[in-house]
Length: 214
Image (cartoon, rainbow, N blue to C red):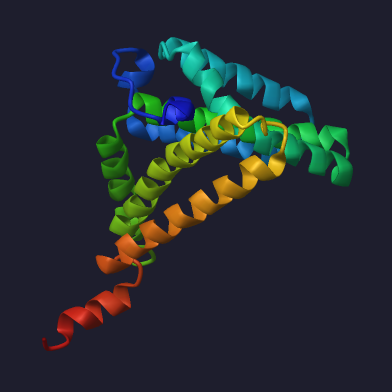
């Protein structure tokens, strides 16, 4: 879990970022996510990165946790950069990767400065006007699973990488990628089974089960 950095746990504090209303922080994360779609050069992305870093500094988030967060997704970023470089060219590849880094760090600042309960309650309140289209509780549940999964996957990758390094296989992609993929699949299956056991994956099935006689 320590390998997840910003996503590992809420960091209590009294900074302006901690005290900012949830809607403002969510709007900030959304804005960071939109920038790559409208940017035609690196300048807006670099400015966004600077703003995210300044926000993390104002929130007094430890630098080691920020760097640890980036290290957790570094292998994925390298592979994505290489593929986009080959497919679309260097300029596009750098913009894509930088946009992901900005969104990842912005989401990390949000989770690090906001208690999970406050985050989920805020999402439920925000989704209530759309209750005819989506179930607010399901939206909150989805967010909770994502918040739980990110540090778990990052921690699993770190554990597998340490085990491979102990066997002298740190340079072998197969020794790291395959076990991590198996762990992620097992985690996804166990999570899905737990949700299904509570009737949370298919509302129709859950409703039918409640109405059927015992």
